[in-house]
Length: 417
Image (cartoon, rainbow, N blue to C red; front, side):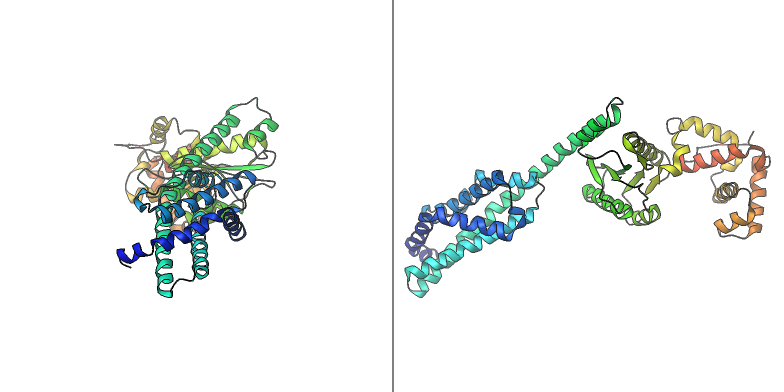
């Protein structure tokens, strides 16, 4: 439609807008009732509902002003009531899609009103069509402009609210963990959850530079939920770290094999899992377990899933890694060689000792012939300079901690002493 034709339709546009404005006190409740009926997220309490009504009325008024006062689209901003309602929507964790859907439904209802009024005014068909098209174009431009602003308002508020909520929750969790004199009832009140059952903590993290760390952490939380069959509770520590814990009446029994396999599809995600424990003391213990498991994961070559029960011994030495490495060098000597063949010897010795000295069981676990285990054990004893049974416990601990905390950098290791 040309500018001249649009200008010719201005009186009829203003007439339609004037009729809508005169009946706005009836039309606003009609639109808000439609929102409540069609969109479940719009079924608020009285306070928020009043804000929703004010938001709707302010948008309708702004559209009518555009139609009657020739206000340009560049001069349009989000009405204050609409902006505040978007913030409240974000604070309640309601989806942005529901808010945007309301704007499009409202746009459609407004255009339907104009069509009915044009039918009542009964202008020539071509004039009616041109006027309807002009009104629809103006309303659509307004909605597009306001939605763009609303998205920014909603997302900014969601980030701010999430950060504040998680910061407060993290502080509450830390208070429960650190205050030894806090009783169960007070701790439950602080966390708004029962602490009398079983708990299991997990720590999730992604390395710096991870693309979409928030999405990665959400995926990790979902994996934990699938592995435990429970809905986890979460605390965002920062952009790359999240605490997650499972609370249940029965002892949690996560499928760690399933979880470890699932993590293979998320190479930038690591999870440290504490041991299940009961009550307030258990809540604190499983958190400490998860923290220690994470320390092992960060110290050694581990990635993906680190379960505290599997690294509990190594976790005791995470603050004394250099001393532990120096001791391991003395115990293992040349068995710490950096080449692949020596690494196979170490793994064979570890599995052999874990199999209580059974060549048959070790061969089955390593998927090799029993004679291969015999050969590798003899080679390892040559490197050690003594039979495995001579310092069995030391050898087992040294192999385990080196595997979990990382291999020491060695030069000429010589013979074990």
